[in-house]
Amino acid sequence: MTSGALARRLGVSPTTLRSWDRRYGIGPAVRADGRHRRWTPRDVAMLETMCRLTSAGVPPAEAARAAREGVDAPGGRATPEPGPRPPATPTRSRAAGTLPLGDVRQECRGLARAAVRLDASAVDEHLEAAVAAHGLDVAWQEVMVPTLHAVGRKWASSGDRYVEVEHLLSWHVSTTLRRCTRPPAPAPDTGAGPVLLACVPGEQHTLPLEALNAGLSELRVPTRMFGAAVPAEALTSAVRRLGPAAVVLWAQARSSASLPLAQHIAAIEWGVKGARGRPLVLLGGPGWSGRPARGMARPTSLREALDTLDGIHRATVRRESR
Image (cartoon, rainbow, N blue to C red; front, side, top):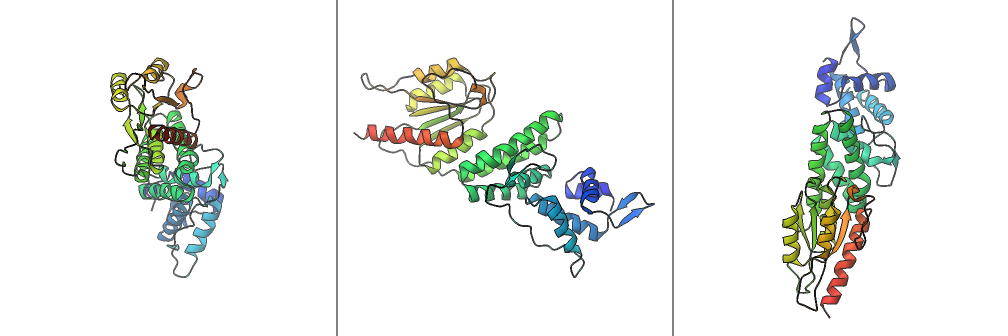
């Protein structure tokens, strides 16, 4: 098999194959005319093991050693046993294939490599394992977000390359978050309004709100999820109809973060005269950075947002039950 054909089969670049050959001795047994690489079935089995282990977060040097030992074992084939799972402890890693991850959890490396290879099942497994090991808020903040940002940076610096990686990873992150979201509970008789979650007009980034919605569902805080690019008129109408305890407005970019809209939502009242209510407005996302937000909360993490909204819900239930 030629290097190009093997690279397509494994979902890596020919440059990666050359790098593994040079750095770790994972190379072809045959070189035609002394230059052209030809990969035998034994070589292919070794490379498949190398890819499987690195996708699981095993450092390349360790993966290469295990792959070589596998093909040298009795039978001459790489061992089919899967590599070890990424550690549950907050081990850090400074490299992740071709993505600029920086200093992140070990799990990010395996997730990033699986995404670059467009290995959907491996991406799904890494995401599920991260949530199971660390809980939703840590898995979101320290595994999903750094990997999504790394893919976004690579996409931005590579033209249209890696857009398929970003779309695949985003889809599976969204799927994982939906799996973590409990079905809505029946409307309580406490009179406490739900939490409204909405992206501001023109904003399409919904994953942070999906993570928040999943986390609130675990806390049994009632929500109404409106998703991307909610028109101002629709948002105003929903606030008046539902009388929410809080409204979360997400803005990824400064161009979409409208402070007048946030102030308008915060000023909406409902209820009978003498007992009117207003929502607390939470401003989420980097688009609000540097904007004055008097009377509005600005949580800096998923955990902070969950704690704030859970506290608001509990306080509202106590007040309404008196």
